[in-house]
Structures are given as C-alpha cells and as structure tokens.
Image (cartoon, rainbow, N blue to C red):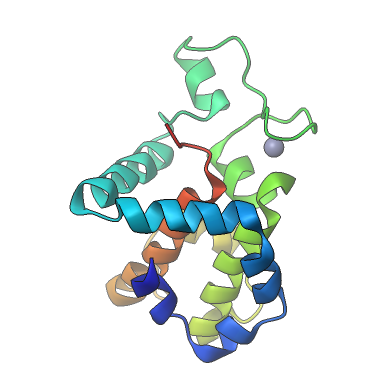
Length: 158
Ligand SMILES: [Zn+2]
C-alpha cells in the first residue's frame, strides 16, 4: 500500500480531496487491511477479481444474475435501483465517490493525455483496452490504482 502511495506524484497527494480521503476512517481501515494482507497471495486475489470484472463474471450482482447465482441484478450498495455492472461499479455508484476521485485524479495527473478524462476514456482504461494513449508502461502504472480502487471500495471483501 505504501508502495502505491509512493508512486503518486506530489500534485495528486496535495489534491483537495486527499484530506477527505485520509479522514475517512473506513478507507483508512481498508488501507490498513490491505497493508497487512499485501502479500503475493493477496495481490493475486485482486488480479483475479479484476480479471473476473473484465470478463463480466464477477461477484457484482448484474454478473451473478446472468448465471442465476442471485435473483437481484441491482446494486445494493446504494438506493439508486440500478444494475450493478462493471460500468456502474467503477463509474456511477455514489458509495465509491471518494475512491473514484482518487483513481481519476491519479490518471489525470500522471498522464497528460487525460487532463479532462472523459467517461469513455475512463471505462476503456478500466476495461483494460490498450490504445495509442495507453501503452503497457502507462497501463501498468494505472493498474496499481485500479487495484487500489477495488481494495478500498471493499466490494469484494470476503
Ligand atoms: Zn450503488
């Protein structure tokens, strides 16, 4: 986790929402938890969760509904009554606004091409689609923050 923070440029650390981020006990706890579990095994676990998200066979309700693992395809983390898809989880659910801002700020501050990250660019990045703008090196860097998002939302915590 510390390793992740150290890769943040100063501008990101000083961004307005950073104190909010730190003040949130919930997130602090999640980060603490992540530090403890930040072993090879745990990293692999997050890789697997991300892979399942990309292939739309994750523990999100819209995915589980497709495979008849649940009767409810809606997001139960908020009261918006929307399908809990990968798109909704990363882009829209209001429960994860802070975590989403951290991820977006990171992408915008680290990569000049994404100064005003559009929703379309954002979801492409989340889905791991390579493009001229996102080469392997950039993606590897962003991926650390996608993982941080997954961990700090706590959505897939056992
Ligand atoms: Zn929601």
